[in-house]
Length: 321
Image (cartoon, rainbow, N blue to C red; front, side, top):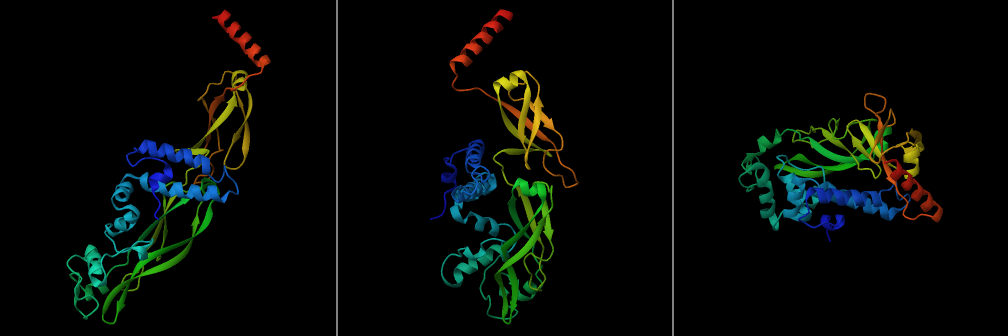
C-alpha cells in the first residue's frame, strides 16, 4: 500500500505550511541518526519523514500529490515539457490495454495522435515524422539529492543510480527506452544549498545517440541540532540558570566535535554568541561562523537547601528594588 505522507508526518490534509514544517522538525529531531546511533528503525523512519516533507512541504508538489496521490511524480514529469524522467519511469501507468493507452501518453509530448506509430517508415507518430524524431535533440536530466551537513563540511563522493528515457531508432521507426545509468559524483566541501553539479553526457540520449547532461541539485539535509543561517550555522545550547547568572565555561557542539566557550554573568535566554570559524566549510575556503544561542534550563525539582538559597536570593532582590 502506498505511503500516506500526511500520516507519516502526523498532520491532517488541511494542515498549513507552518504546521507541516513544525511536525517535520519535531520528528526529525526524534528520529535523526545522530540522535539514534546504530538504530536502523529510527534511520528508516527518518528517511520516510524526510521523503514526506520533501513532497508535502513543497506547495507545487503538494498540489500534485493531493490530486494524484502516489502517481504525482509521474504526472509532474509528464507535464514538464520534456520526454522522460530520471526516476521510476518504468512504473508509469499508461492507461488502457494495447496501444490506446500508449497513444494517450505519446500525445502528451508530441500532440495529435499516435496512430501509425512503429508501423511505416516515414510515417507520422503523434503528428511528428520519424525523420523529425531522428534529429531529436538530447535532453538534460535533473536529479535532487539530500546531503548531510557533515558531508557538506568535509566533501564526499556519491554513486548515483537513476533512469533516463533514451531515444532509439528502429528499422521501421522510432521508440524510447528506459535506461538505468550509474555515475560517481564528487561533492565539494562547502557547496551551497540548492547548487547544481553538471555531469556532461549523462542525461537522456536523443535519436542521434548523443546524450544531454545530468544536473545534480544538492540539498542540505535538515539536521536535528544545527540550522543554517546564511553562510553560518546556529546551534541551541542549554545552560543551567546558575551558570547563566554567574557566568562560566560551557561546551558548544560543532559539526566536528565540541568547543569550550565562556559566557559572561547575567547571560539571558535567547542571547547568541558568535564562534568564529566554527561553522560549516565554505566553497571558497575556510569556514563560516557558529552562533551559539543560549537556552536557560530551570530545574524541575529542588532540594530543600536549594529552595532555601533561592528564597534567600529572592528576598535580597526584593530588598534592593
